[in-house]
Each structure stands twice: as structure tokens, then as C-alpha cells.
Image (cartoon, rainbow, N blue to C red; front, side, top):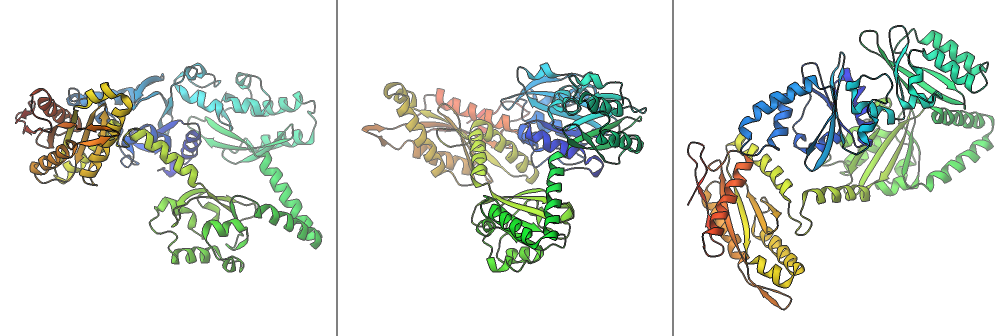
Length: 582
């Protein structure tokens, strides 16, 4: 998903995921380079299609295919041309609606990299924050507001070392009440003022920090550390830019330093006293054994030095195996032999390599053979090795799946909703076009439903709709897509057919099944359905045209005073005209 030349963008994307903000980076030739998970959540039409190097025009084409109606689709090229021009010249954020979301998009030109586009959900106060990042150009848009919220202090300097922009986190770390107070000054001046404001400008940490700044600011790119009043420790990492402009990240590593100091103290105590070592070990073991996560410590040589009881329960590993302090690769081999990783995608197994502990993927989620979802985190330890934790996230995963199901399914019948049906139809039409296949869209409108709903109430009407959904699923094939489009209108996408007679046969079976009488409490119910059929490619070459043709065919049944359950199939269109009905 990333180009090595832009590997600093990927962590930004992951951080934006945590804020519910989408991003996508394009190079100077408008080719896709990097995107994050929120981008695919906001624009699901790109999932499985967007790839590194894809031209922006292809990206736009997918976007507009899902938005344009039949009367607009012929003008898609003009929409794409306008979108490219807007992409290249955008200087201000603008809002738009997509798939039920109100989004705000900003675009930022990154010299020597390309153009970064950022999307966020539109909120009333969101735009009020634009431009508060002191020193950012106006076309930074939503990115300015975004960077003010990140926990990392960011600073931009010119060739002379003068600060040209900082975010709010930087100002907070260095005791500035307003980010603009840093503009035009050097980091050395800001650092000295922080210690002066604390009343200890002669503190050893201040003197040492000033010396470090005088030495390290000459070597852009080399990381170094500063101690601030508190005390707090920040690691400063520089990234050279173009035109002698440099961006510096100031990361608070106070807790990391405290952990390292505690570890050093524990190690020293272990060397000084065997009794202290045993006491510390017992305390650590007691802590580990009562954790909800499974924990394993892997030394620099790749051996599992210790583990807790929970890891045995989560992974079904035999105690006698881990008691031997085996190599990590031996444990992985044991798991493979017992089918632990069968059927898992490569990204879920990226943490398994035992030969690159220092660069192992920090987070992976995979499914165990027993169906439980396990989150695996790998944390590098000072001096080499890893601390690996295993957490059961099954309930969280199921909750996420429930959310996704609600977004794509009708809450009453459990069938696909209109948006999901159109998504499936778009994909199936594209597949049929590539493979020269055929498919059918059946549009159903219930007959006799309104009197039941009006006479016996909405509760009875809802039960009828549920029964209809169950009947449609029972009669249709498992490979077909069934949806409730709204009200008492339904649709079936029949895949992989060879002849229109197959669609007619399915429609007849559906009509017959829906016309059967049944009992609702003490009420005997009998309804029917008017069904219109449209075939690909005879009646339309795009999803919207197919659905419209099937809808029109159904309408002719509905208004033609035909008996319940009668069918209409459009004849093949000629010369691009509207479909004719038979």
C-alpha cells in the first residue's frame, strides 16, 4: 500500500484512521501512492480496485459510476476532466455528500511528493478550526485543523533554522500559549524560553539541551533527544524537505524513558542480588498470570523466555512446549502442523517471521480455527527482542461486523438494502462485461399489500414483509442477491444465466410462491407480486439502466390490469432507445 519513498505518509494515515479521517496521496503525475483504511470506508467502491500507480482518472471513474444516473452517465468523461482540474488546482476545502455521508475534502500540495487529499465528516465546528495551525498556507485546509489535534509536536523551519510553522501540540510541549509565538524564532530560542519560564535556565538539562541543539541542528535527519521542564523527554526527528525547508517531529518519550529506567534498575537489582531477582520475578509472574492478554517475551535470539497462563488458553499451546523455552520458529512450526494458520490472508500472518524481530509488523488480527479473533501486538524491547501480546477481540470484531451488516442490510427483512444491492449489481455487471456473461434483474412490487397494512396496521404489514423476504430467499438460489429496495418493492439479481428463459422461470417461481395463502395469527393472508425482468446486456449495459428497465417492466404489469404474479420482460433495445416490453 505504500511506496518506500513515502513511508512517512503511512504512519500519518494510520493516525488519521484513529480520528476517522480519510487520506490518499497522489504523486506529481496524479498516480495513486498511499491511502488509509478510512479512505476505503468512505469510498467502498475503491476497495479491491485501487492500487499503487493507478491514475487519478481511473479513481474518479469508479467514483462517478456509483453516483451518475442514466441521464448523466454519457457525460462521465466531462465530470472526470473537471475533477482532475479541481484536484490539481484546489486551494480551499469543499463539502459534498457521498453514500449518505456529508464529507469535507481538502487538498495540500507537497513539494517533491505530490498532492495529499484528506476527507473528514462534516461537522458544524470543523471548519472553524481551519487555519489555526500557525504558519501553514491557506490551502492546507482541513489538514491544518487535523495536525493541531495530533499528539506529536510538528515544526517547520526554513534554511536559516527559523520556525515557519508549528502545530498546537508543539506549542503545548514547549509552554507556548499561542503557536504563533514560535514563528520567526529558532528551536534553540524556544527551548531556552521553556526553561526560563520554569525558573531554572541554568539547569544541567537546559545547558545540555542547548549544546545538543547547536550540534544536531546542523545534521538534518539525525534524531536526538531533549529534556524539557517537568521533567519530560522528547525525541526530535527531522525530515529534509525541498527548497531547504525541513519538518521536525517532537515525540514525547517520557514514559518510554521511565520504562527503560525501571528496566535498567531491575536489571541492576538482579545482578546485585539473587534474592531481589527472585522477588521481582515473582511479582512479574503474578502480574502476568492475572492479565487478560496472553503475553510472551522473546529474547534477541528468538527464544520465548517466559509466558503466562492466558497464552496457553488463547492459542491452545501445550505447556510442555513453552516450558522448554523454544525458539519462536519452533512454536510457529508446531502451530502450522496443527492447522493454526490455514485459510488466513497474508496480512494476518505478517507477524510470524522469526528472522526479523526488529522489523516485525506491530499489529495483526487473525482468526483461529475455533472461530475466535485474536489481535497480536509486537512491541520491540530495548536491547533486542520482543514483547508479544495476544488479545481476544472476538466480541469487538462481531460488533464491527454488526455495524457493517446494519449499513448494508434492511433492518426488517434482513435482505440487502438498495445501496448494497446497487454495489453488488455494479460488481456483477463489471464481471459479466469482462467474461461476456449474462445476468438478470427482477423487480418485484407486492400486490394486495396496502389493504393489509391499512386495515390491520403496520405491525401486520411488517410481518408480511418479513414473510416475503423469507420466501424470496428460499426460492432464489444461494448465489443470487435478494434485496428490499424500500416499502413493498424488492429485487433479485440472478447471476450467471445462459438464457432469458432462466430468468422467466425464476420470476414465475417467485410469483407462485408469493401468491400462496398463509396464516398471520387468525388472519388468512394472500398477496401476489408484479414482476418485471431486465437482462444484461440486452436491456442495458450499466447497472442503473438495468434496474430502471426492470422497474419499467414491473410498472407495465402494475398498470396493465393483469392478474397477480404476471411477468413482463423487455425486448432487446435497438439504437440506444428505451427498452420495449413484451
